[in-house]
Length: 295
Image (tube, rainbow, N blue to C red; front, side, top):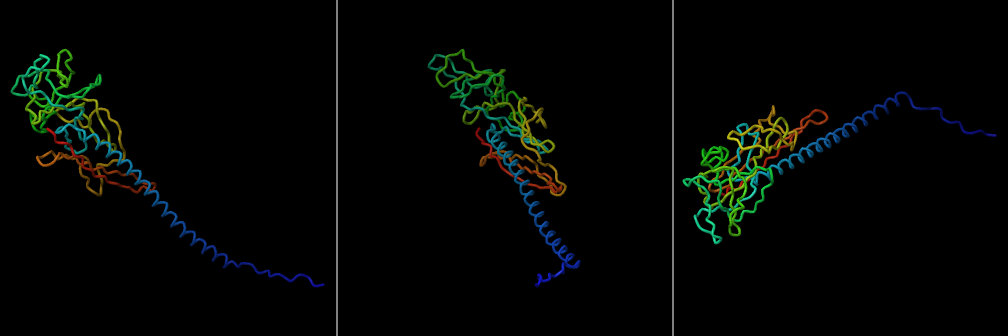
């Protein structure tokens, strides 16, 4: 009886095993390199996307508030890291004539120089309800920061700004007419071409401190711009004001209004955050905000 056919006892030689190990190592190295490159690209993209989201939110917040600034109240500090303005709450037209209303009450014209100072005057169609405890200011034709007596931040008398106290409810006035009461007797510097009066809230500032963008409010107007004011609400982090390789422009810059265009505030936000390898990832967002020039 014939038994099973003999089997070959030949296996892999040491050289063959080494060759296979080397080939597998080369393939693994190439694959790992491509894998690492893909992961680094993905991580960098995710980081830049996160910075972009932060930047878009910061730009949108600053843009929305600046667009609602009272004309000619925006100012930027010398370092370009703070912008300050008075937010518009309401606007109306003021009375500039001495007349007697149909109710029999004499009008109270706005106290504009050279008229004598007064602590109250009439306005038309002012839709505004003060919030208890909040500070408000009345402005007539501010000329803008650096304009001497026309600067709304200088608290000049005569000047464009006076503190608001409330409304006089003890007089009989026609419909649509309200009598504004100031905190003290005041004279406004000059008439608005359209007899326009603004009601503003307390000052608001956006400042970059360290690597954070902060919003400040709840403080009184001052002749010298506070940098930064007390307190502050963090709006964004990782914002940069210095770069060892590329000179950075001012974070905020302001171009005043002219007869042919509105005022413009330029925002130049640059964000940087290191990735997991310590490499700096940068994004830059530049935006222009138009401030209405309505005297």
